[in-house]
Amino acid sequence: MADEIHDFEDEAPSKSALKRESTALQELGEALCELSPAELDKIPIEDSALLDAIHEAKRIQKHGALRRHRQYIGKLMRRIDAEPLREALEALHQTRHDEAAAFHALEAQREALIRGGDAQLGEFIAANPDADRQHLRQLVREAQREQKAGKPPAASRRLFRYLRTLREMASSP
Image 1 (cartoon, one colour):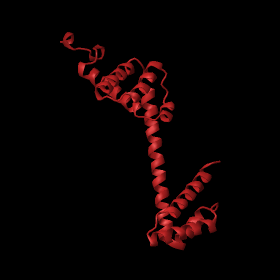
Image 2 (image 1 turned 135 degrees about the horizontal axis):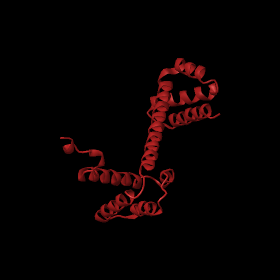
Image 3 (image 1 turned 90 degrees about the horizontal axis):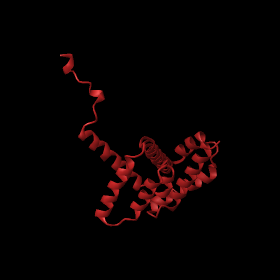
Image 4 (image 1 turned 90 degrees about the vertical axis):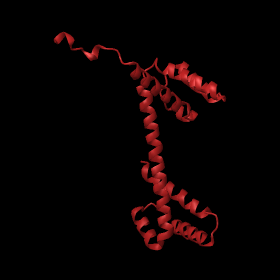
């Protein structure tokens, strides 16, 4: 009976497991191809052939050629340790998510200032003592007039930029 018990840890991965791993690496390669050059510079790709293939994929226009090239990138990905690339890509996506959340928070703050009037403005200035009270009040009033008149949101954009500047000043040492 003991002879019949197999030690599964010594066996090679199944064909399905290898296919799943290969597909995951190809998808990771495709995600790398979709990055901008600035974002791609943040990813630690040490294999020059892989980096060249990713740059080449951006120039390919034909669907069939692009599909074959992505398969080639997947093949190159199998030669390297893809975990650092995956972690760097996840960190990049997390950074994007955090930036989007901060952007939406600033938008909500701007809208609260425009709708809230002087009471909301007083709370904001109390929470942000570095804010120029007069300039902020002027931007809020211009944005309120703009909304009432149905004009394009130029003052609202200026208010948003000012709020973003205040946030950046508060976060820098």
